[in-house]
Length: 78
Image (tube, rainbow, N blue to C red):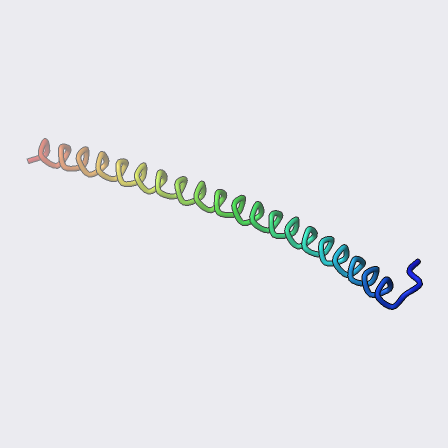
C-alpha cells in the first residue's frame, strides 16, 4: 500500500488500467461471439437460399418436361 498521495494515485491508475483492460477483453470476446453468430446465421440463410434456388430450378425443369410431353401428346392426337 502506498504511503504517499503520488503512490496512491499510481495504484489507483494501475487498478483503473487493469479494470479497463479486463473490460476491453470482455468486449472483444463478446464481439467475436457476435461475429461468429452472425456468420453462422448468414451461412444458414445462404444455404436455405441455395436450396430454394435448386428447388425452383427442379420445378421449372419438371414443368418444361411436362409441357413438352403434353405438347407431344397433343401433336399425336392431331
